[in-house]
Length: 272
Image 1 (spheres, one colour):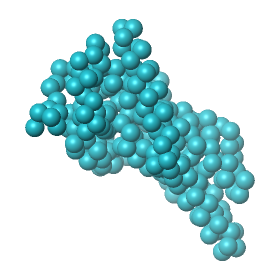
Image 2: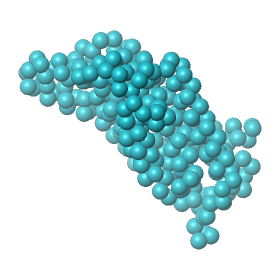
Image 3: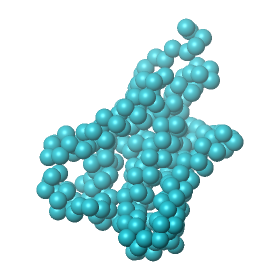
């Protein structure tokens, strides 16, 4: 267990140090800046129009815009950092050394998972902070501190669970892990989660994160009400149940991914 813990922390530290290269830092900065830049352009457009109705409209849509844009960069960052957990070692010809070390495989899996979570949450946190500050300064949103805390809580759980699922996918599909993970998001959390009145949408990650967000942020979809939403998708469970389900999915994905990386034989380039 000590070997796992020390190896996990060492791997995480190495991956974070490696993330401070110019290329990776530039990608992280671009992802973090994308939501506030888009929000700023929308606000600037409404201010230049001079229409009071346009300003009230962007104020009404500010929450949903923030949620959608931060979700995009959160998932993109995890696709970049979580899915290549095995492939990067195979490509770098370091897998044989890792596989021969006691606890090396599980340490690399958990360490890369932890690094992917920290990087994605840092990007999400930066984007959330800049969006809320901008919206408060230019639009005067209600309770910016409460909104910031709620969004940080939702994306904390989002980064935890998606990093685990994407890490699991990285142990299964190797070279095509990023494509499979993107397909999973589209199929599960965009298509399946949008099917009204069906049990299948309640097994998606998005459903549980969405319910946590509605409970903590409040209703944030303009043009509709929570009552209309409940008529279509049904009543939600207590928020703690959704939190426990998210934690359960995370632990299950990590356990399965850990078992897979320990027991599966990966072909290195030297063996092909």
